Image 1 (cartoon, rainbow, N blue to C red):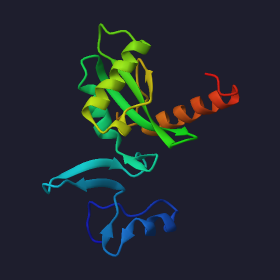
Image 2: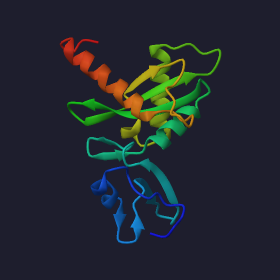
Image 3: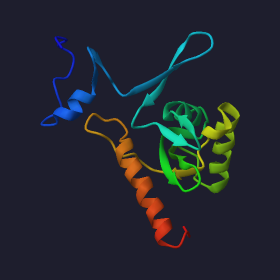
Length: 163
């Protein structure tokens, strides 16, 4: 592994480091697909991939669809636990100035995504936020959002299924 741009190892985790390689190939954890015309499409990180009712859903295309709506300034999508589907798509949405959070707007966003993507990809849960948790590099922290979604799900379960 003589590529100077490639990481050396996970600190004190030799098994995890070994799992990142297939011979001389470094496995990045990114998913992509090739369409019928031969174009490559980035689907997202393996740990960000949402598995819902047997479908694999990349958060990037759902986020792109959401931000194409004039009400949405920024969006992040994660999987939320669901007893029936395994996971469902949960969107965190920061609104454009002048828009107000409401269930009617949440439903309009669901319809917008259903009209632009496969029907199984729409966010069944939408939470409006004023700001996103960020990583040290300034990116939206999906890890924190996944933890938030898990905590919200356990709160619902802890209340006998009532929100």
